Image (cartoon, rainbow, N blue to C red; front, side):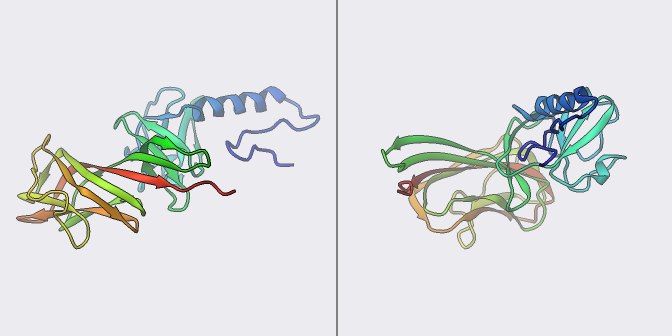
Length: 244
């Protein structure tokens, strides 16, 4: 019999175990950290010197600190009782990130956290078919080079109506930028603003995409040397009937 639960890794009390309260308390504290999870940040890469009890961070690449430097990127670092504990996430786990206000979902196949898609079912059939309105968001930070490509994608077999952007941190290096896809760099807007707060609603006629397609931001008048842009994909997605 496994000594931990399969999904949340909660320690289990073993037959005739002494000090049962230790195991039970450990399980309760893990639930306290993992249920309705709010993390402080997914980008802070320096281990906090004096964190509050029960606070949680997602470990980014290149994290530093006595404990954090030894944790796998993507782990949930929980501080309690004066010590750090790293909890490996499973695919589908969802957390709210306090410093950005976004929700993240863990992608097990890619071994990374992605910004969550907002999904609303517009209509549903009796056999599982549905029509969904979706919004998929990502913020690209530290822009660098001739272009930047999102990790989130327009889903295959979806119909796109708009890709919107907002410049969250002033862009340096480029005089403006285009928003589009590979081969159509300004499909969702050209010569867009680099000042913080600039935005664009790249509305197009309903367009079907037949493969997963990332969004590409292309620098104009020079290469990106910094900046932050939030990108949102606005689309309609059909869902086929469930297996019989």
